[in-house]
Image (cartoon, rainbow, N blue to C red; front, top):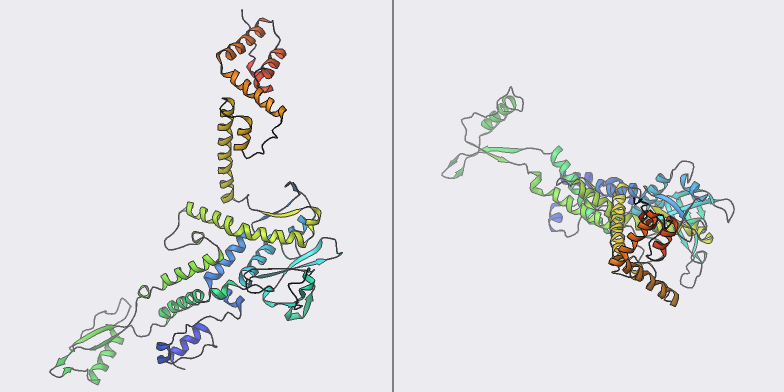
Length: 465
């Protein structure tokens, strides 16, 4: 095996087919990783694993909640199941493992160990996707239930089968067929292969540089270059090995009577643009998995604000939709939909999401304040007020129309000079004792349209001497 074949075997394993130099120069077929074992690819390529692991970590940050048909959060025994899905996993571990399986294989198989058919499961497990086989019935479009399509799910290594009712199968990337998903790793074969080749190239350049250069004769005569004699060449080599080196006690300059020239043999790594190649391939992986670049460290660096925005964007555009898909499937799988209940994944507690929620609340508060002022000033009606807030319009009945007229008249009265004078006269009457505070408050409520608290606060009870 020559040196080139040895390097290729180190890069791509013993299954690499040796190529001669001429074949390599003329070939148009790239050298690719073997995607037959997706788990091995995931474990071998650091950039791919970083993306998949980060998604799993982010998804596992969910708070699982149960909502009733009106959207109210309730306590339900299923939350205990999620708190401890099985004897060795917590919610975070279970969700993280699910996410990892989905992003490697594009398939996840969740098994429920159920006592009675209509009871909650005793445990839930993520079955190893790489070891699962879907046995279909051969029937599809005319079937009304999953049992008519899927005969069983099989854990191949131990020959254990499960019925369709025992396993929740979730898949993605299955546009060309219906039984099994297609992993994104197959589509990313080229960029993943380039990352692995670039990393190994840098390693080989660093650890197996070989000769760093050539000292050769620079003498010439009328016939051209004059080669060094054997004795002179050996003398220079012995002197160089004996007297020169990186040790500070040795010299670093060769002194010889021969005319010599130096030809470097090393190639600066930056000239190969391996770093740029890795960055470009990493971007392809990030894009395929829906993760923002600024989440990860880079040579360019990212500001703290950019990192927070990248986290929020990834949660909103990727993690939350994937978590919603899982929760919707589990709602049906666990029979909660029959109770009118729904499982949801909540990430609002995270700092990056709380800031966004706070900003929305501030905008809504400012909007309500502005609309209230316009309504108080008589610039808009009550229905216009409600419409701006996205509330349903009240039914246009004679009574409601009359109520609107009364409210608008009351608002208009407050802003007139006569209206203000009337309010002052009411306060004066209370102060003089000719009118009690309760009656005065009721006048402000019924005539001017103020609420109870506002009307009560307007009666000052200042005694006039």
